[in-house]
Length: 213
Image (cartoon, rainbow, N blue to C red; front, side, top):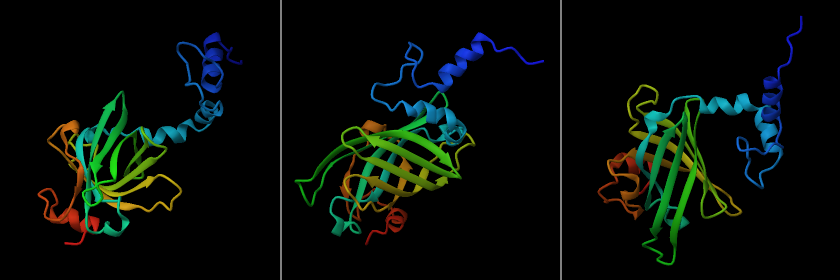
């Protein structure tokens, strides 16, 4: 005997599969492609998997160290320090990264950019994918080394891997990065470009980033 289709099932299927409905419960942002909801419905299982791991052990503020990118010829001589905040709410982990500085070797170059995005877990990697608030650019941070490994209830102290910023026509090269948990809150972490000898640049940071000493 075939199970009768209830009104609830029909309504659920309509809202799950259709990109058209606009109600107080389902109100997609104006300008989003209509096919986005259909894509999410069709490939929902694949999209869900990177979001299922509990990443709340990452929650907190960090300093990110990476080769300073503003002057290409000096990438092996200077380090950019930016700030990172990771937070989990309702099972979803997100991040905000801020780069706010004036280049000491080129005062005409001033950067004030904030990136927001999602934190994913893929094949043992922590992946941060975000979009800039100010420009048409995005950031990828892929950390394949974390200490300790998230999921044990112990706050993660270090993330290490590579990052890529995508802005302009390219080419877009990746760079190493390392992030350490900070005792200071996010908005009190000082950002800027520094050189070897700075109190925050430990030998292991310089070695990982390939900075000349």
